[in-house]
Image (cartoon, rainbow, N blue to C red; front, side):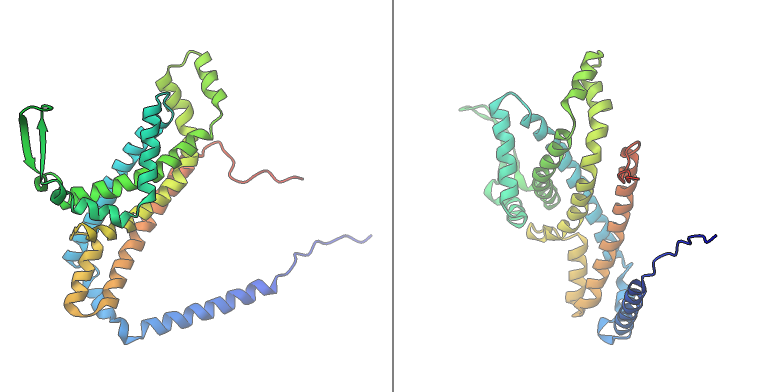
Length: 282
């Protein structure tokens, strides 16, 4: 009696593609590593220099604070969008329309010129005396201008992400929770938020990584402490742009890798109990 033996299908094309790709990667790596025009000695000298490390710190600070501002404003705008008040809804729409419709570089230029346009910030009684007045340059510093410019621009995009996340939840779940006597705050925190986070986290993670790289545009203000400005200043002094571009790129890649790992664990935490891969039909 003969037995049927299942023989796995061979895929020689896959192995051929791997070999060809490995050869290409090896050739490119060798060409780059032995090319004296890359100035690898300069790259290693400045990779951990104090000026570069300080730039990395400021870049991280701008990213974290700007995203905090963006998330806070976006949360408020989502609430306003769902309001029964047409004025609040109109303000929310207008905010998103304006900050998504104008270039981030233009917005940063405006914030850099804010102290020129409005030299003083004052609090006064309408048609009455001035109570207090402060020079704008002491309030809207370059760092504050960078945070506001980046945060307000990002809030417009996060508003749409948050709205999509909460719109993906069946309204019947909130109604069922209300029928069980749950308070609105508890419904929002225990029922709606965990489900919305599954939709919100992936694009928000991408926006955070985008924000990290967008900090390189704060030169428009001008803000002169971030990583890009630090490496540009060194390269202008040495007349060697390539190794310093590699330094900046290395740090951006390293920080992005850490953010991607954090995003992965957040997605796994809020995705508990949900199958990522659909069941296969037998």
